[in-house]
Length: 498
Image (tube, rainbow, N blue to C red; front, side, top):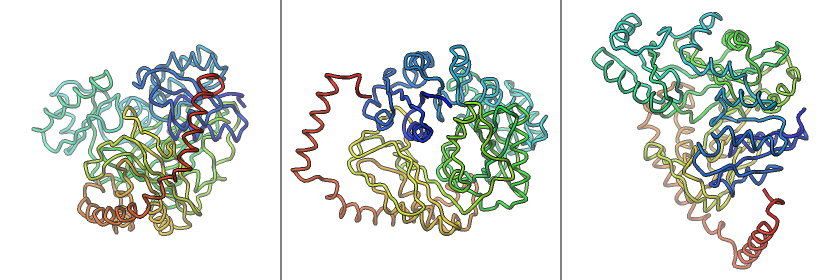
């Protein structure tokens, strides 16, 4: 096992990795931007280093600064978390040049899976079901028209090098194709530096089901069950659960087997996720995420496997903790992403200072968070505040527990997605498990109806609780004195503090 690991990320995922390091007796190193100088993750780490200005390009995306910091502090490995550099093959290349282990997939694998076109070509060769579509990039309108006609409308136009739904357009007839092609190519060139697009059959009202995979450097590959990730807005996930409400042992064995074939065929190592679209009894490969996922906690809860520890063990050369037949799924877990966003304003980001914070607790409740009372959420990064995860013996119990936990979760000062999540838990269609990727749009009226009642109740509750976030004059004076003392100590001995 490594002695020291640098986490090239921020927020709750940085703390999540540091917790695994602490349990394994490994020193953790944080890197932070000027905007994150007061962040919880920087204070939680054993060591922390400022790497630049708030702009990601000058800090968290600056590979050279991260490599330099790893060498400076003597870190033997780098964990990229998710987002930022997690799926950038150049980080792996630089790590290899400098004798640093990247806790993740190989650069060549990341590059292959990062291309929508190349990844589907590899999956077809591996016998994994793929959505009908182009086998190569498209740039000319004539080719696009011919392909769309052969597949049959509706089709979806996507950026080959992109993700997160950026530039994605659904086309129902030929007249729309010209505008869609121009729009997606323009967005793709701007966002990814590559205007190549591809076209595939549009699967209407699909479920988004993914399988966690683990693969070591000794040739062992397994899947660690399934997750349902169909509740989304703008192709970004909001709620995930494990197992999927439609999953059977037979379907899990079939889809899980396809996920293992997908990973094995490309020589995959470490943790990854194979994502599928499922509709009317058919499933198709969507993409492979070559990193740990935001929603990994729900898999950990229903299987009992610490996925981040497995990442560290695999990277240090150990074999997998178990075989496929050892994996069992017990109970049901749900994760709600708590973001600093206004759900009444199309989920617009709402960064700012948290003036009141009280997280939920009790049996079966887990909160992965990177914030605290009086912390200011910076506007430069993802809007996630925390992940609220609950466990129940059944899906019904998990939903009831999530409702209770959401009622306990108090965040003041910024708008959050908590009212949306409360409304979702009240939705009869959600409770029935009738999920698909357009669920939020289809049942918007029902969700908004619940949300108006939720917000009214929340407003009354916050008014009752607001005084609990105001310390007495005596406590406030002591707190101010401590803060003053710490500031002076840090200025005198800056190397002793992160």
